[in-house]
Length: 489
Image 1 (cartoon, one colour):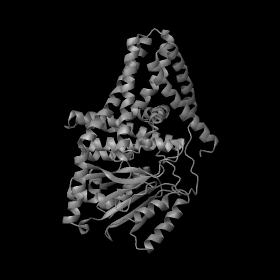
Image 2: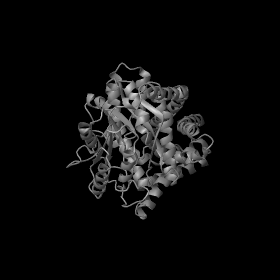
Image 3: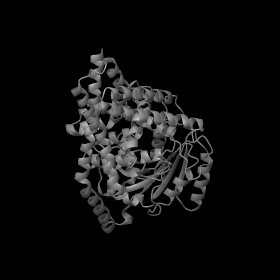
């Protein structure tokens, strides 16, 4: 039995190493194409406005899906109403499924903007069928625009967002999706927001660029992007059978032959979740939705004639959250192995396992570092929390493992939006609280026990990794307790 557990342990380490090594691959792909694609984007925009001009811009519909966003609804509507775009060619849809005072606030704002001559609609539904996907589907059916720009309520896109993105659709008829980069409104608000910003920068700077610029599958991130309406209808519109309808639709578009384009210099600032429960809720949705999409689409992806490398990268992309159950397995089993074997595990085996774990940790770390260096140059103080981010990510293993397991077991759950505070919090939205923090605290203590055993046995390499898990679990679990005591503030 112990031998089987040890074999599974080695398999888990091996799989984590694959995901870690892939970070180095993505960094290489990112650096190889960076200068070329930025220059291509700049020249295309310059040529479009020189030869065709603003009069060639088509009608666009900006969609704002909202559900109980009282604190930020007016801010995002004002930002989009201020878009610099030819008169009569920009429609705004506020897709409002709210059940609180948000609807009244939105109605008043829409009325005022209409009076000022803004083309804006306030669309309400009797039920939340399909959640965000259902709202976007209805909006697409009613939209007058040939292209649909989507912005979540916590975003404040710049006024030239459409001017910087729409020309790519006009020039390339088979382009179905353009995705912009997420920026940050509250980067330095807390350790949590700082760590999230580092992770977001890594994804949008290196991962998205590497995939799109090298003809790999790229995903729409749910906001700060634009779809060609014909492409959406071509693949059957929005589906609500996963919690990540954005990931699902973007992959289905590309499987149907539509192209995607990532614009690294098109930035839309957004508010980052500022408490641990909101962050856990968001991560749970992303983890579960990603696995649901993987189970739904990977069979179809592997049946296509795309290159094997492209299909392999799609597999790693869609199953990325599997790293969390793998990490949790290692954290739980490592102390048991050493205790049961009474410190007689072969030194070579422990050394190899430790080396592979090091590779798996260095991959993401280097990816985040590369992103920070590209975005901020000498201001590398922005990534000084990188070691803490690694611990933080390990601490999320129990929360995200639950999400992955629920996806595999096909357990259905509703779309839970992430609460936003805005600049002036009018209403305090309380996110759902899960008692998993008790398991996180127990796991943290267990890993500390393991650290003691490994250090006593002079097995420092694996012991240090267990220490990372211990810090992560205790921090995430402890912060959850404190947030609950303080009323989730």
